[in-house]
Length: 192
Ligand SMILES: Cc1cc2nc3c(=O)[nH]c(=O)nc-3n(C[C@H](O)[C@H](O)[C@H](O)COP(=O)(O)O)c2cc1C
Figure 1: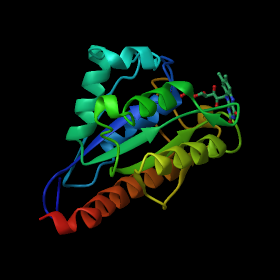
Figure 2: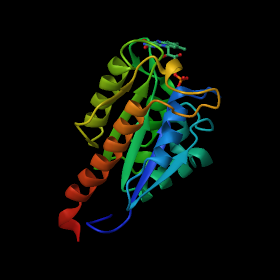
Figure 3: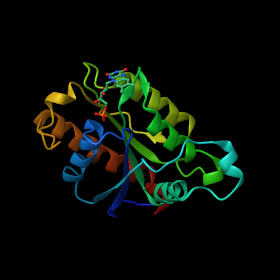
Figure 4: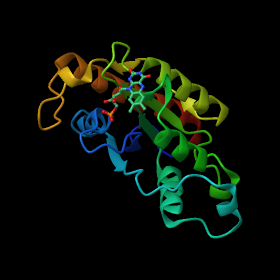
């Protein structure tokens, strides 16, 4: 785990599988907006199978083992998910469910985490993001309270190449990442 001065390793994942996903694009934008002293690794959730407890009594699927290892190795998580029908997109929920289970060692427990959501609607996925926050709490993750990043009307914030062009949103993500790094260092400050 990182303490003051050490590089903070963030693992980012997006809850949409769509090629042109705004949430994936927002996560990629975070790569350019990281503060000094932080790294961001992005993991693709497409290969993660649906959680089925029958799979837990045997060797876990490779994609799940990889996800669990990446979460374990990370100092902090960045979860970026669309809102589907007022809740968390299933791709994100499924991934978190896997890494909350004893079968994977529950590596999310104790992890600092920041949340973002992008939506074509007016609320920027806020309702889904609050559900995801609730899931983080029950999994004993340490969600960052502020700032909150809700990217509303995302179709107006990215260009044709899925690059985030909206300065307000870029700044909001920059602040979120800075706060996540500070939060992670604070939580780990007693660990040397
Ligand atoms: C099944 C489904 C349900 C959706 N429900 C909501 C919703 O409740 N609120 C909202 O703001 N947008 C909703 N949307 C629209 C999404 O915000 C939009 O499709 C967005 O682009 C999805 O994220 P992505 O671009 O990362 O794939 C929904 C989309 C789908 C496919």
